Length: 330
Image (cartoon, one colour):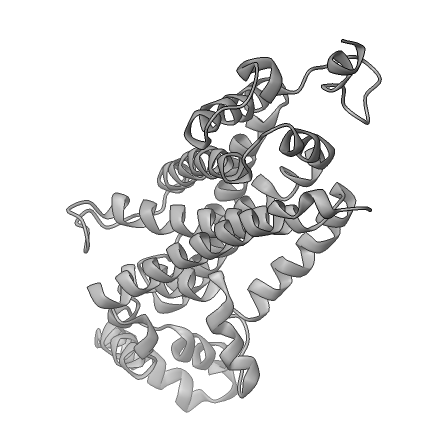
């Protein structure tokens, strides 16, 4: 009886506490029956362990991004690209932060409960459902905050009848793919310190190899295919119809040096006076078009499919890695 009572005591907490598995099941249950047990535990941690704080944090970050680079989104190529890249990075940050410590912080409990009859697949599926809820809420908050701050979204969607639903799906998939990638990392590492050390390198990798922040060539360009950021950036730019927008880079550059030549200054004045500025900006946009950002259903669906694939692959890898948790001797 004494050994039975002590089997639910956490190794890093001296106070007696039964494991959720034994407390709620009273014994062994099937895989499906175990999922709601661990899902309930995750939602209790959301409420009582302050995991809900990720939601206001995502609202704050979205507001900052919208204020800084959101005014020219859907207006100019440069604004669309900058805001799409920034939103992609926000989604990746949210996803990584959601789950980077979720498994490694309770690794000793997982080992003990696995030996007591817990199915790893049930445990991971419960996390997948819970993280899906978090990512859906973060995506909703991000879209709502961007609209409140002043980003002028189109009304008609390209995939669905509503553009806000289209972009919500993209933001959700970027966040969720990042979240499950982070869940896998949390399944591999053994401490929260290691997890938080790895996360900045993952963020840097996603930014550098997004294919948008830096010009890449050779093997480095191929690595963009392994990043969530690439497909998130392409999807957001394609949904914003990047290739139909005007480009202001050339005009702004010439405008800055107008005082270097009286003839140039006069030419710019005559262009504006004749009402030809918009035509020049449109022509500049035509010259700056990117085939990767083509607004087509096939392009957007392809990006969505890749993001879903990332989530599925890392979910399966998380299960495989944790199945060997009993062999952990560290």
